[in-house]
Amino acid sequence: MKTRRQATILDLINEYSIETQEELLTRLKEKGYNVTQATVSRDIKELRLLKTLSNDGKYRYTSSAKSNSDGNGGLNGFINSSVISVKSAQNIVVIKTLAGMANAICASIDSYEHKGIVGTLAGDDTIFIVCSDNNQADEFVFEIHKYL
Image (tube, rainbow, N blue to C red; front, side, top):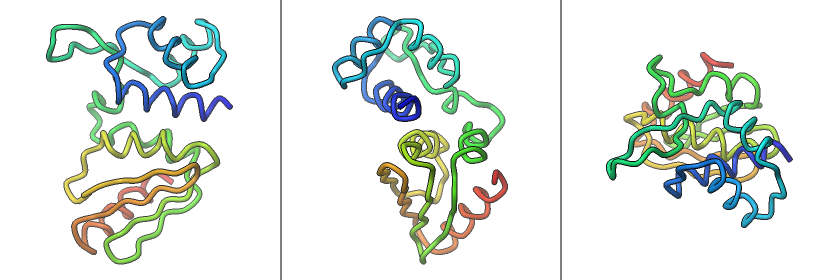
């Protein structure tokens, strides 16, 4: 339940400009999660969400992966603890994850902004990544394997 809720939180902050914990709590309740403010606060801490200044001058929650300066987009923790396998088939990369973790990992991959990634699609435990060509797919798989 926790991993699904946290994946939903990442989806929500990517979809909406969420400025407060109360707003995040309301959005979670709309999605069917009956949680307390304390739970949301712990999730924010565990996900390492940050409040960053947006273009409209307001502060909103963002994933620390988007602000991570170490170059890996915050992938290390997610991949190390949640990825089961990574394989490429020509220009498509398939990542198998623990149940409920694909959305959170996919959000991190999206924020990673790898030059060879054309698009991503996440289910419950599987991520499909379309790369611009076979070489880019192989390079991405190699990079992900560094974190396993």
